[in-house]
Length: 211
Image (cartoon, rainbow, N blue to C red; front, side, top):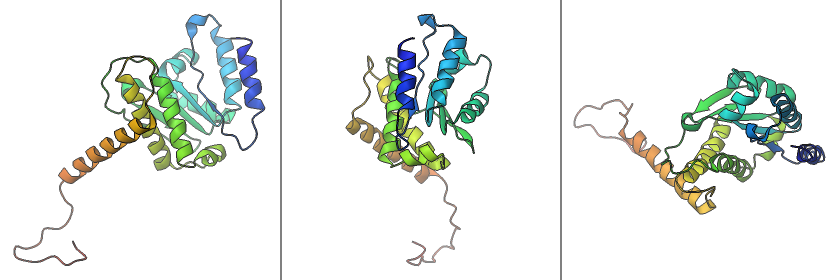
């Protein structure tokens, strides 16, 4: 809504070239601003952003019937380097001008959805900055594995928020603890997978290198 819409656009325009600019439009149809105006303002902000995140509900209202891949193409055309769509229980969609993918959601106990989107965004930005990735996002030279790691952190942040009442994003210590649990679970799964190592004849020994 005005005058905030113009003020936000002006603030982003004033950002220096070394500033990472992120946008979450957080669309609210009930406010009463016509869809065409909201889409125009969102695209104006996208033209100033390096990273833009939408929820699936934002995307469906702004671009009815369009798939995330189609909207991603439009966002990259406007200059967005990293485009992210949260998909609720289906995880999230990640896109750069070079590649796109989807990653599954983190396991979560659903208590309250309020604040989950904000927790995802703050978790994502934390992961980018902690990984010294702000310049990487600004330049758009983004490796898929690195971005997926950022998104996993964002989804852990959202999962923790889903598990309690109110818009209460996790503290850093909680986020790190959740990450350790996820890593341990992954290692346990890997340890149960059949080994690809050749079966050695009974009675033979393994060398130090083979161990």
